[in-house]
Length: 197
Image 1 (cartoon, rainbow, N blue to C red):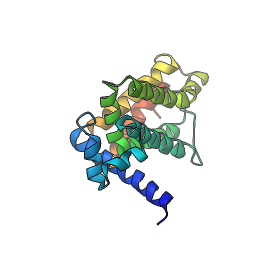
Image 2 (image 1 turned 180 degrees about the vertical axis):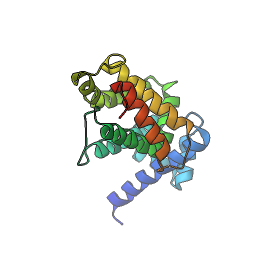
Image 3 (image 1 turned 90 degrees about the vertical axis):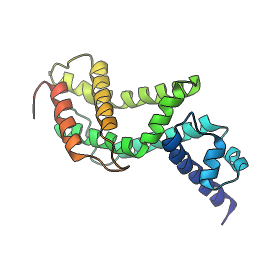
């Protein structure tokens, strides 16, 4: 195996180990040596890939963002939230990313309590996600349907609701609860559009 391949394999192993340890102990209670031991790597190898635990968490957050961007760029993407299928597709996509990266999200929220840098990274991530989808909600107002609040506030309420429901319905990673997706779709669609579909 070439050196580049070994380095890439080590980075993947460290990220996977970090997720397992963060899930078990929490971000704040995890030491770098816990991660390297879980990954079966020498403690010094960590610093060949990450400047510290925060840098590793930021890399995990970048992976989460990249997966969301890949899913959003898929063919057939609908961006008009007057269409219930567009609302359903976005909720299902968010649910998938949430399930796959719940540990990273919890670790980032925990780290943001003590790290201004992580808090700023998390705020930028959330602002970027909101900006990417704001136009989807603006379509509702442009169609003459009165939103419950400004597009920004309406979108924040929808995000917060979806996040709270997903957090309250623990499941195995990668599995999306169809009942929750359907209920959230109906609730968010009705809340944004002022009517059922």
